[in-house]
Image (cartoon, rainbow, N blue to C red; front, side):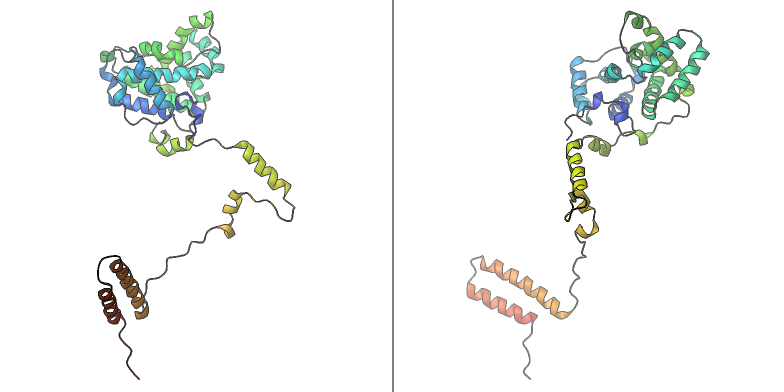
Length: 314
C-alpha cells in the first residue's frame, strides 16, 4: 500500500482522468439524504469531531458506511473543506485566473461576466473542468429548492465561494475582493446549464475500486530502475549481456509452458490401473484401522481378481 496516499489532499489531476472519489462519494451520499429538505444546508456546519474522523478515513481510502459520521451537515462541511484544502496549494480555479476573474466581476455587467465564466471553464484542464461542473450541478440542484433550504445561489456562493478561487497570498485587498468571488460562484450555480453546456458527467468518470487500488500501489523505485538501465547498457555488447527479470518474463522462451491436462483413460488397461489405484487407497485406509491384517489382504486379493481376471492357460 502507498502509505503516502492522502486522497483528501490530492489534486484533481492525480485521479487518472477521473473525478476524485472523495468528492463523488460525499456528494452522492449527501444526495441520498435529500439535502433539498434541510434548511440552512451548507450554511450550518457539522460536528467537528465527526468531520475530522471522516476526513481521516477518506484520506486512506473509500468509506463504505457513513452511518457513524453524524448528520448531513458533516458531509456538506467536508465538501467545503475538500475545496478549501485544495485552495491552499492550487484552487479548483487556478491562481493565474484570479486577477482576471476579479477584474471582470468588478464590472457588474452580468452579460460580460457570463461570457467570461464560459471562457474560463473552457480554459480549465479536463480534470478540473469535470470536477467543477460536478460540484456546480449539485449546488444548482440544492438552490432549486430554496423555498425549503433558504439557500439561494447567492447564499451558497457566500458559503463555498472562498474555496473556489483564491489569490496566491491573502492581503487586505484580496479580503475586500472576496465578494466578487462569491458572486462568480453564485453565477456558476444559477446559470449552470449555460456555463457548463456540453460537459456531461456520468458514472464513467467516477473512480472505481480498481482505480483506487491502482492509486494505493507504492510508487516505483526510480533508483532501482536507473540501475537496471545502466546495467543493461553497460553489458549490452558483452559475452553475457544483462537481462532484467521483467524482460525475461516477457520473452517467449522463458515463459512457463501451458500444457493441457492429461486425457482421461479410454482403454480397459488404463481403467484397470485407475481401479487398482482406488483399491490401493482403500487398502491404505484399512491398514490404518484395527481391522485384522489377514482379512484386509484377503479383501484386497478378491478386489484385484474382480478387476483383473486370471489369465486362461494356453
